[in-house]
Length: 277
Image 1 (cartoon, rainbow, N blue to C red):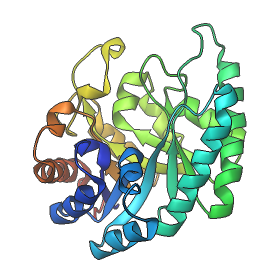
Image 2: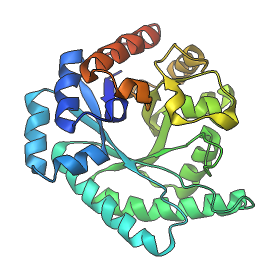
Image 3: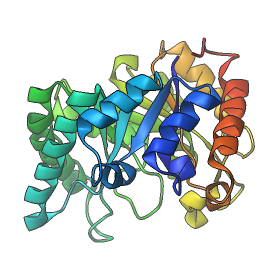
């Protein structure tokens, strides 16, 4: 299993710093936060980024992310343009996938059928943009109560209905823990359809109160991290893993120190189950 750092974990650091800190902290890969990517490309070129990654021997993993892909109305054309632009970047630098995020529920009474139908339609359109570039779309369920797709089962229903050979799942532990998913859902997943695994944990809080700022280092919270890893191992998953933490406390600390602490915590959790590189 290749362990990647995730740029949201040190959100105040630049993309250049994420790349150099990832190498110094012992990672072999980086999941790129697209807001940092946009800032970087205001001054440099995509080829400059490719060279920088190669110089530090850091593999670019998923570009994260295109947000709120569904129920966009007239705004959807700009989302397609964003997808095209990110696919072109991903192809040049060697990133295999772009994360795509479900939308908020447009209205409380919106039916599940409407949510599925809309996300299926949108994923098929995004897939048609990404496929000519050889880029995958990694669909991530979001556990927060105001999102429309909150569990692996829900995400997989949409992915299977979309039936695109470049659309798969991102499994995020924090979102699983607070979204109402059941551990047994992991046993039904096809490992080849898991395009990403976000390693994190969550404070002891009511599901209704959860915010991304309540994430913490894996093994430091209440999520069933060990059980999740065991079940992923049992279904044959051995793809990439990125440690992704949105905790403002960590953002205020030295980014290199955070990267090192995150890697140490990740290794402690992962190594009983996976061969980590």
